[in-house]
Amino acid sequence: MNYGKINKLEIVRVDDAGYYFLDDENDEIFLAKYKVKEELIIGDILDVFVYKEDGDQMLATATKPFAQIDEFAFLKVTGSNKVGAFVDCGMPNDLMVPFKEQSGRLEEGNWYVFFILKDEKSGRLIASRKVNDFVFFENVDIEQGEEVDLLLYDKTDLGINAIVNNMFKGLIFLSDIHKNIHPGDKIKGYVKQVREDGKIDIALEPLGYKKSVDRNSEIILTAIKDNDGFLELTDKSLPEDIKQQLGLSKKVFKKSLGNLYKQKLVELYKDGIKLL
Image (cartoon, rainbow, N blue to C red; front, side, top):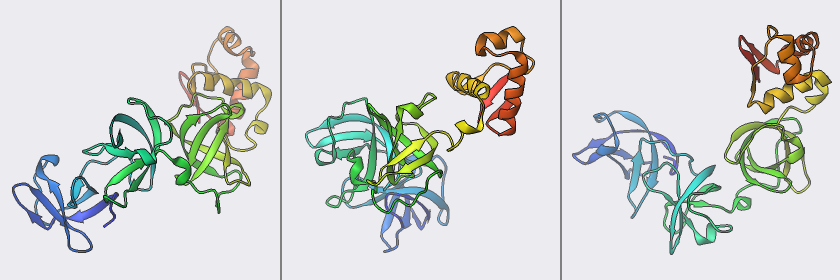
């Protein structure tokens, strides 16, 4: 059984209050009946998230949280008291962010990136705002040009910071941002370089992408990005509409569009062009 994660467990006992599973040490994990829509019986196997609230009893919920233990997530601050702040992680109760795990002031209603971990004293799950304590700056085992998963968070004067593959810290420079992205977005990116300090420079397109298209194709791609990834022009559009939106002749537009399609950079629809 993995605490703070989703487990596939079998019901071994049922009473009026709920259902019971067993962990690796034969301790019971309780799932309240009111948290399950359907009637269950002994022998049923469920995917449940295992956690603790007050006390030592292990609890289960069939609701999938926004993040599991050892994961980063972009979460909303719901309140605070004398011991810390609280964030909504999609669990029955909000997670605490103790003062020692805060980095700067947390404003209620605002969203920040947090790391989910187990509090060694209470055994409960908590959230930490201290991102740098949980990313790795050594043995960064990714290479230039590699596609990676990104969780965007803080904006800076240089660009937008990102958690890379839930393990490393990256930065997308302002000069490399050519589409609408925001903190909290989960997107794909590409490694430009891994610096000596272990931080990673990230691009939003594959390396060499800009060299692979001509100037007119770049005009079309920029227009698609500026329109949230979809441009209402096709090879059937009127020449004056193409000229007005792109400054290109219809002949040049059709040729450049064909090149983009062959390179699998766009998808063509009856009513427009979609960026891939």
